[in-house]
Length: 293
Image (cartoon, rainbow, N blue to C red):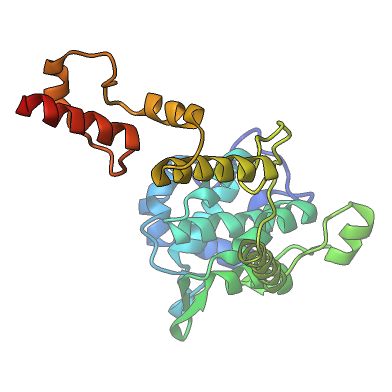
């Protein structure tokens, strides 16, 4: 019962899912110690604990001993987990061998359309993978492993199901054309250049004030006002000008008026203005004469 497929599983590519692995390799997996001790009574959840401690990928090593990677692949073929569970395996980016196991199972069991849509985004992963084979160990990269699944006929000593060409799926199934990562990088560089050029160019004002502005400083009215004020001040300081101009100038000063006040106020009066008018000089002379008397 441990080597049989679970009840209710669907046929894959018109046959038993376990038959995707060759009979000779499958029989060696059944006889291996790892299968009898570690793969017994595994579920779609508990198989995660076994896959995250994997040290390598591969099919058969020396003396035709199957690797733990291919043994767990056969166990997945027995369990036949749902597509949502496999997607969760792929989303676990911190466990690269779990992602490799899920990608290998998807390549064996899924349709060609789903294989291209699910596996091609994984080619952005450039981490190293350890490969176990009959001669020992070697190193590869995750993107190379995905490329082998999409282009080669035999991976990890397993003959892969036939995959429909991508060009045919683009014409018949509506598969989007594959975009190279180099083209994506060029597009991003072009966007960055546009942003930098827009930032360096002088920006035009977005909003224009539509409210009626006040008289600008350079308007002729303001110039005339300044000129009239300067003329009035100069005329008062020089002693020339009409009496009405003098009265307006004296009324604007903060000091009190001297005319018509008592003598106490006259004694406390101190002129703070730098200019002296003739009237003020007459008032001071009268004060001195009153003091002498």
